[in-house]
Length: 69
Image (tube, rainbow, N blue to C red; front, side, top):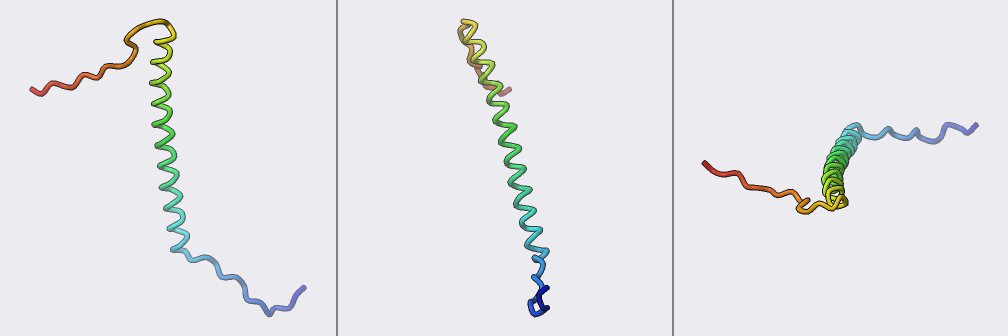
């Protein structure tokens, strides 16, 4: 057992910890949003590839602009 000459380490500041938590939450939200976008893109690509594998033509989606009335 050592003598008590050393000072106890100071706890981290609460404000700094809250900032770190906010940054991690933002990173997590961006990561989840990117994952959802990636899954949607992969699903669309799979549909086009399945269509082409069956020998069909014109498998790409055709986007028609809305008419202004």
